Image (tube, rainbow, N blue to C red; front, side):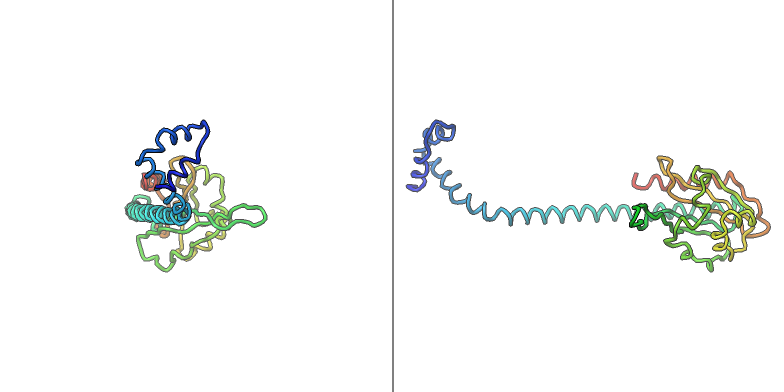
Length: 238
C-alpha cells in the first residue's frame, strides 16, 4: 500500500482528479482500486492486441456462420423456386402448343480490361419437352455470351414484347441461335423476356414448336406461363 499511497501523494494541483485523490486518498478502498489499476493496467495494455485479435476472430466466425446460414436458406429457396418453375413449364407445354421450352438466365462475366464494360453471359437453367429431346443437352447454352445472339440484343425483346417466328423468319433474325437449335427440327419459335419486381430483365423464356402439327402456338398462354414464372422467382427470399 505504501507504493500506492506514494503514487497518490504525487498528484497535486487543483484538477478534478487531484481533488478526488485528496478527498479519498487515505481511504483503504480507494487505495485498493488504485493498486488494482496500477497492476492490471500495464498487463491489459500489453494484452490488448491479443484480446482484440481474439474478439475479431470470434466476430468473423459469427459473421461466417450467419453467411453460411443465409446461403443455406437461399439455396433451399432457389431449389423450391426452380421446382415450381419447372412444374409450371411442363404444365404449359400443351396449353401453349409446343414440344420444347427452355429458360435462359443472364449472369455477370468478366469485363473488358480496357473499357471496364462487363461481358453479359447466360446459362440455360431449365428445359422441358413433351418428347425425348435429351440429345440437345443443357450444356449447349452454358456460360455463353449474350452478344453472340441478335435476338437477345433486340430492343423489342428488352421492352417485353413477345417475339414469334416461323423457322425461316427465325433464321433471318438470329442465324447463330437458329443453327444451335437446328437439331430439333422446329417449325416455329416464341421468345419472351422475364422481368423482376422493378420491371428489369432477369431472364428469357423460349418456347419452340418442333412438330408440324403444332405450327401455331398460343401466345396468351406463353404470356400466362411467363407471368407465373416471374411471380415464383420474385417471391424467392421475399
